[in-house]
Amino acid sequence: MLRGGNPVTSEDYVSSYNSGTGTNSYSHNNVKDTYVTAGEGIRFEADIIYYFKDQAGLFLQVGYSSGSTTTKYNYTSTSTNSPNPPSSYTYNVDRTINYSSIPLMAGLHFKTNIGNLQPYGGAGVGVIVQNDLKIGMKQIYTGSSQNTSTLEQEMKLTNKIPFAYEGYIGFNIPINPRAAFFVQAKATLASFYITRTEITKYTIDGIDQLKSMPVRYKITEYEENKDYVEIGNGDPSKPQFGGAPYPFAANSIAFTMGISFSL
Image 1 (cartoon, rainbow, N blue to C red):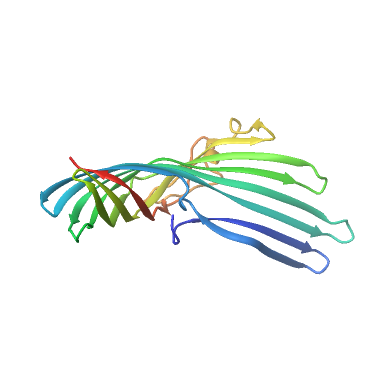
Image 2 (image 1 turned 45 degrees about the horizontal axis):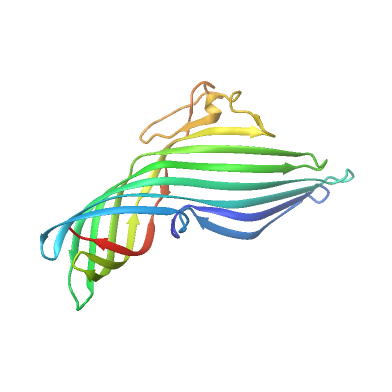
């Protein structure tokens, strides 16, 4: 994702509390926002263009994109409870997002000739099928007594298939009548709407905690245009309701080069 998407922040966060004066202090250090795609991953794409005129045609496109990114969150808290000795604890958290998707696009393609160059461009619409979207977390906790525990959790996100918009420009340099070297810039705009989250892994010090968790703590469902009232803690055997689906931006700009072939 480019700037404007949902960032996953790496930072060091420090808090302290002094009960004698009633003061709190907080600091954020080494803050860095990273974005999910950020050029990390792989992408394959196949395009078929049918020319109904010499310089205009229709294109069909299918592809596959995948990747991952990892961020770190370090949290330290110290509490001074006079006259008792101070207590402190730290969390060191690694968060990883893994994703893969399949774009299916169609639109108009145009080309022209300027000497040996063949500039081209196009625009289209389609859908992006999110094949996999997971968020993993590994957290190491250390308290004042220096006892350490390790928590690992993985969450799967399910979303609606979104409409996507695509535009691209580039140029070909012919190698022979059937092949050309190309350079291209392409922008894709889309927003996923998360409709369900499910915890698929949860361990503490290697011991599975998932089997003993009620369904409502493992699964959250989101639905638009729905009024919902929950009484008390709700039914533990049913997913909890999280309100309207929330957006997960999937905008990207790709710069590619390679060899194209015509039939």
